[in-house]
Image (spheres, rainbow, N blue to C red):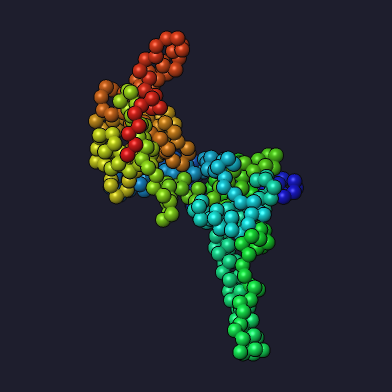
Length: 367
């Protein structure tokens, strides 16, 4: 990819933002009524906050509506998979290794690069890959049939030999298959909503994030953006992870946010299933997000009934990753535990440390 092309890429964000701001019926109605865009958004947000007990809108619907409203504040850099976590294929990888990558990684698309990730060539879709293999196999079968017919006519008394033509060679490079599709190139500052619109318009579900120097900074799929609204999307091939629970000396538990409520309840000895609608919330992360009405940020404490508190240990803008559960007990248990850990961190090495509640020092009771 040339420097001029990358310069054009970095300018796409502004052009797309202008293109998205087209007058709509809703815009014209707001203008006629003298209502600004910000006031409509504020009215909707206030309504969602005020009518929390209304049965007309479920907690899950309320959360999705809030996520839709907050989507305009997110940039591509907030949604992207960082460069270090990108799984990509070199253009010269063999068909056999590419097939193995599809099988082990469980992805339907892979970005393809030349020498490095800073030299993207496009992407390969598993459907195009399988179609290519199938077409080659069918071509080989037709050639074999023609070969057998010719041999039978020339020497009917001799058995036809299996021809070598049409045999699929899995050692050839992926680049020779000519099945790469283009990807979008976008700057980190591009609004995530604008990228979603562009993906829909171009029917391209993968974008590479290009930094100011023309290097690859990250990757965004259309699923990444949709998950900002509806939460994690898992398909039939996503493997269930083993629940990791660590008991800390202060009595708290650090738990994987993706753990099911039933498993977490058994591990920590507290019934969490009664705190949420079983039809809408299945995981610990879903419960805490439902209680907060949004995706909490790292370090935030979400209070539940009976003095139970959830402290966010690790999270990103779209999902919770690890949560510290503070069982019912003294008031503000999470705050007190965090202060104790802070005092322990500030204690000199030659002095005995107080009970800090470091999860790494606790007993592993993984279920």
